[in-house]
Figure 1 (cartoon, rainbow, N blue to C red):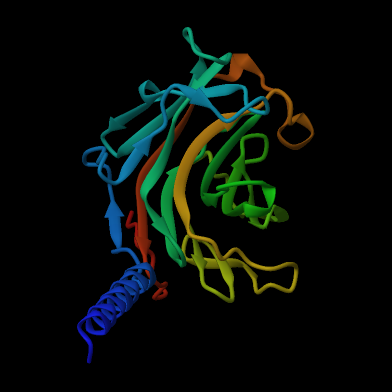
Figure 2 (tube, one colour):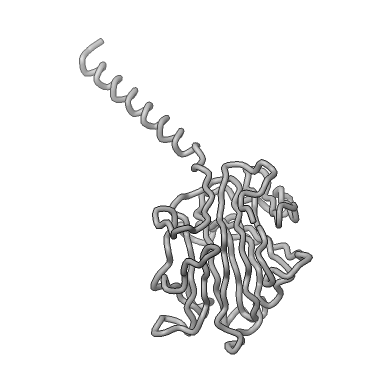
Length: 254
């Protein structure tokens, strides 16, 4: 073989090897983890600080609103002290990006009109048609119910179900399983809802994992009005966990 042809062949082979290695890494699921917040591990979590989600929220995000407590972490939504908004609260975002797997948290949601406790995965790298999301949301106005929501290309699908208990009265475990063909939501290890794509295509894009507490002065039809005298409001979280697949058992223990 001519020298230049050999060189080209070598570079083509090297490029193919690198491509295949990159594809293999992209298809390898992240490692499982169990986060009990013995410390706030910033190699795992981004702590939102100094910005807001826009005009539809009444709060900005502040590092100061998240603190470690004996049982995990506490996120406090309270009147702002010099922030961008009337209120400040806290949000965690994962450093890792996930595509499929089982996501779980153990928490006690706060009670109060205008509030949302959210545990979810999300991505929106561009216009609305790039928006994928999978949600567990507990509204402070009705802590005896739960909302399971998903977005694919910006199209929203929401289901509201009774919990059979008050999420503001104590710790409970909430999780969702994301596979290419199904979404399944669990509460205290019990399957509460499933989507298989019959109500609309399921999310497929890689996403970060989030946990936060927020409020709104504009989405009152959904959340109710904020009643300031009810605050401050506290979300208590003892665990967040992830596994590449669901094996029928809770990851967060009591």
